[in-house]
Length: 216
Figure 1 (cartoon, rainbow, N blue to C red):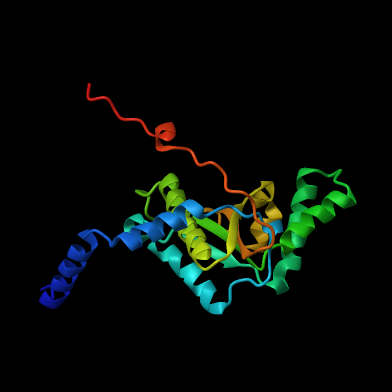
Figure 2 (figure 1 turned 135 degrees about the vertical axis):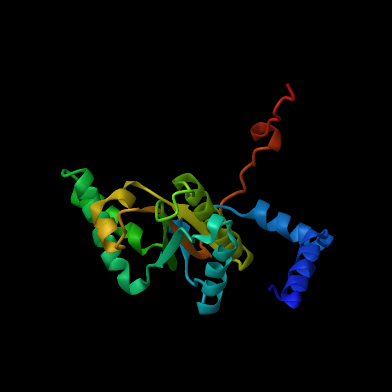
């Protein structure tokens, strides 16, 4: 039999969630969402988030939508001491794609591993025992987790960016991060202090990306 106290608690929570938020909360949410910018890793430097701030950023991911509560994504932190291993993987990925890559190009590939104080790889599990949740839904869930993390980093005063590239599909990177057969590397998340900002871009308006389904 269900506990009456827990039922009442859930009902109280539902009522609270259904109530309008105070105007200042709405304004803060709008400010965070609309002032967030992508700051590329080469424009990020020290200081990066401290241990407490990192936990806040990581914890924000947990509120992403997750149908069936599969937790179909994970994040791998790349600490400073492991950046050399990532640099080797980037160089190997370049050679795998282009055997004629020059030493300069290889060094440029390696250098990307050392940008930004906080670096994580986002990994999504596309398939498992729950066949009802298709890969696109899992990727959307991971994207929501990433957006939550970006917004938390922004709220804490840091710049951040999502970056991808052909190296994500390389054998070297898959081996380095021990990706399973049903896992896919989505992108890197970089976080740090903004060394050089950028002017805000003009955002698209809802009329540019919203239509209404005709009644008939």
